[in-house]
Length: 181
Image 1 (cartoon, rainbow, N blue to C red):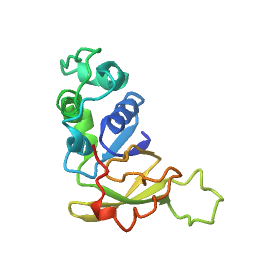
Image 2 (image 1 turned 180 degrees about the vertical axis):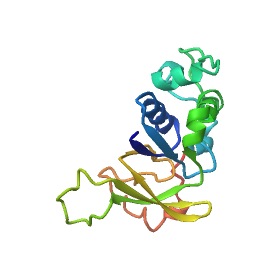
Image 3 (image 1 turned 90 degrees about the horizontal axis):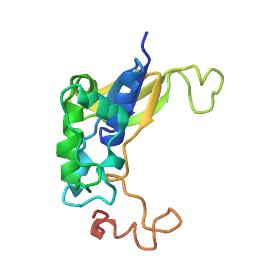
């Protein structure tokens, strides 16, 4: 039986992970917090990326897209976030195999090992993962053989302090701070 891979996040990295899983005969389930693949990229669609198309297109994803006649953009051009969504993420999410695996409006609340608590270690490596997910029809549980977290940081930005903690005054003023571009 095919291994089930739960992938948290349907941006370029999560979709690429799904494409690789499919090539290896695995069953990906892509859980996207937003309403569609690449949701967080829409927040910075106006920003031109510093990396070229050649550095943003995954090989397994390109092979999957090629089956539907997709043509890669100029590898030396620098796309905006919006172009990345329109010309790569959306077509990849719409490909039949990925579309079947995609679960939008799925916010992962927790990930653990089935039947094990935080202190029990015997058998942990063999126990399947269990994810608790808030979906469009309420909470559900999902079992997976492996989990890949490709959720990114856009909707959960890192604190401004240089040591990985909140800078002085940051917590109190969080509602007044804009972390985006």
